[in-house]
Length: 43
Image (cartoon, rainbow, N blue to C red; front, side, top):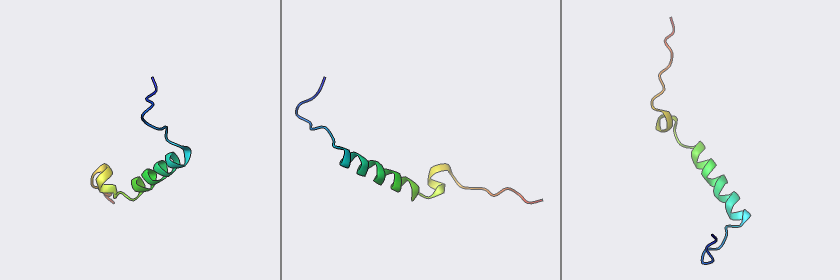
């Protein structure tokens, strides 16, 4: 069921979107992704 009113995304736009999403994911601080980092205790 293809929708004729929407144009298919081309490869250049797709790669650009994936690249920008991956770059945005890498600059998110660690505490936002997985909570605060607690260093292991040194005995």
